[in-house]
Structure formats: structure tokens, C-alpha cells
Length: 264
Ligand code: IPD
Ligand code: CA
Ligand code: CA
Image (cartoon, rainbow, N blue to C red; front, side, top):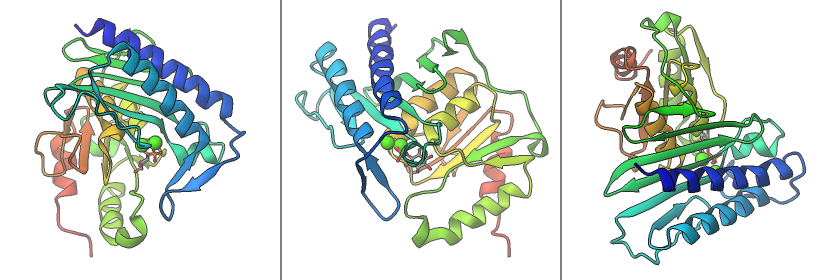
């Protein structure tokens, strides 16, 4: 199922990723969208190219892309929406830190059915279709088997409005960092999720993310045997702002830590 969509999404992510690679280390135009939220010419050019490829192949589909490439020719009633982040990890990219990806997901009637995350610098392609398993460079992947939080490597990220709400974000960070074996903040939520899917991380949490940040990675985690919810343990929804992803085994522990009383 969704074979044609998968092929088109892979092609779009590789071409978009190629643009990112070509511009890596050479971007001249960096604009601030917010106090610490950047956009570069690479975000814009990759997004345009990805949208062209998707909309040429599937002209009736709705598109929701980070840099404003919303395409409503299929109207709000379209049954299918592509959620696109042409460059997840823009801050990394702008600083020459080679940890970034293009992320594409397809939602059909409110359900995620396809996810592709491509890291052009590492040439790693993560993908999944609903019910079809998860793959890294076309080889099946699965989540880790770590059961104890003190043996777990856990990832997170910080929202762009951290400066105004750092207390609650740092409280949560403190709660996890004193329990886990290690905590990382790599700077790309889409990749963090794929790393959970591949067993490189055992869990991930973050708040303030947008649908295009998490949709592809969340499906890839699920298809690799992991679990994805909100901080409250409710079903994952790309339009909700909190996310916890894990290898399933650690999920309740992560939720318990996240919802435990704040450290004094
Ligand atoms: C960001 C990355 C980062 C996360 C931010 C996201 P962007 O996306 O995923 O890891 O912490 O909250 O907005 O801006 O690089 O596409
Ligand atoms: Ca993003
Ligand atoms: Ca982005």
C-alpha cells in the first residue's frame, strides 16, 4: 500500500536533501522568524522543490509545509494532506553542524499513512508506511529492548519560545536527566524520532513542536515497534504540542517521570 506515494516522497526527499547538501556551509541569507528561530535560503529552495514534486504527482492533495508552502487547491476537504519540513535542524544547518533532514509525511482522513525522513549529509533514508514496517536505507529497523531508565539514552529538544518559559522546560529536563543514563539534544526532532525507531535512542520527549516536525518520525517509530503519545499518555496527534516516543518498554516510566511532581 502507498507504494507510489512512497516512491514520490523518497524522490522528493532526496532531491530536497540534495539542495540542502549543496548549500551546506555556504548559506548567505539567514533570516530570523522569531528571537532564535531561523530560516535560510536552503529551507525555502528545498521546500519549493519538494512541493513541486509532490503536487505534480498528486495534484489533488493538500500540502502543509513549514515555510508557508500551504497549498489548498484541493480545499480543506481534501482527504489527504502532506506535512512537509524541508529542513528539520535549521539552527544546526546554519552553524555548519551536519545533523539535519528533510521530513515528509502523508495523512489520510486524519491518519498517518506514510513517513520519510532523509539525512542528506549521512545519506540515511528512514521510511515507513502504515502496517508495512520501518526501514533505514531499505533495511528493516526496530526499537531497542532497553527496559530500565538508568540504561536508557534519551533525547529531547527545546522550543523556540524557551526564553519565556524556560522554568517548566528545565524542570522536566532535570527530572529526566537525573534518572536516565544519558540525555541528548541533537537539534532535529524528526531525526530524534528516527533514532528511537532505529534503537539508537530509547526514548524522546519534547513540547512546542509542529505537525511537520513529528508526523513522519512518529509513524516511523510506531512501525518500528515503538509507542508515541502526548505527555498525558493520550494518543499521538501531530497537531498537539507535546510528544513522548519510546521503545514501548520504557513508555510508562517516561510518562511517570514527566508527570511526577516538580523537583524543588
Ligand atoms: C526544530 C527542530 C528542533 C526542535 C525545534 C524544532 P526546525 O525544527 O526539530 O530539534 O527542538 O523545536 O522547531 O526549526 O529546525 O525545522
Ligand atoms: Ca522542524
Ligand atoms: Ca524546518
